[in-house]
Image (tube, rainbow, N blue to C red; front, top):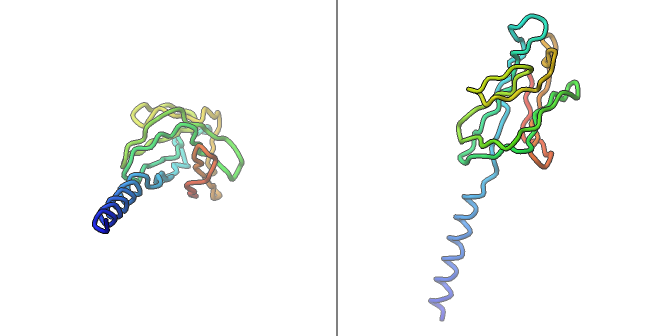
Length: 134
């Protein structure tokens, strides 16, 4: 009986450790803001870069990067799996399929060139997961 309880306990602890390792919190971060675009006046080539620094892929459906210095604009991701170690970009008003093909679709510059701006990334529960300024 005692041997059975010990074996059951060891199996339970092992299962909990494995489950804990598999359900680690995602580590998705804003890693770069290209704030001084090269396109005259509108700077449509500005972008915020988002990287999966975790060890698991993450579906970004409902996640939202936002310029909180101005309170707008924001972009809500459709379903998109960001692989571990990979980066995507959300451009001001351009599309680059090689970087995910995402755009704020904003007709003017978003990121201030002369004063610090702050970008925040929210998850699909509207919890802040990352913040970066330039």
